[in-house]
Picture 1 (cartoon, rainbow, N blue to C red):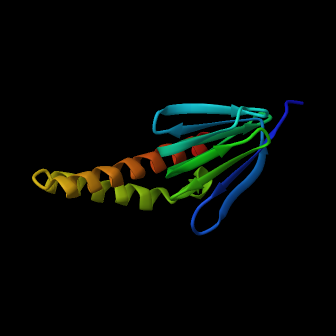
Picture 2: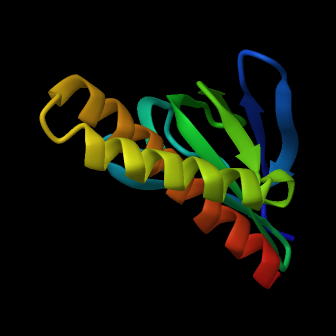
Length: 138
């Protein structure tokens, strides 16, 4: 059996996940990184991105909307601004959020701040849809 590392995902509202995993891959502002048990300690700033983690033959996914990741040899703690497990994503709600964000982007072409906000909302909505779609395949 492969060695495992404890993965904890925490949001301002709750402890979303606490699970022993064999490997995890997250998205930092500098790109994707992977972690196995015994990994060298480090701290990373997380981008809006997908988190995937594997135990045995099961791979699970989560949508992470920014935050920080702390890695020690025995534990990975993700402090996320927002996070959802793929199986818990409301696809209809995410689709509506995507449509609203796309409309805001079209309307905000002349207003830079509104455009940036709308683009960030679109990025989050598209991530949620991508992650939810992965859960549907499993």
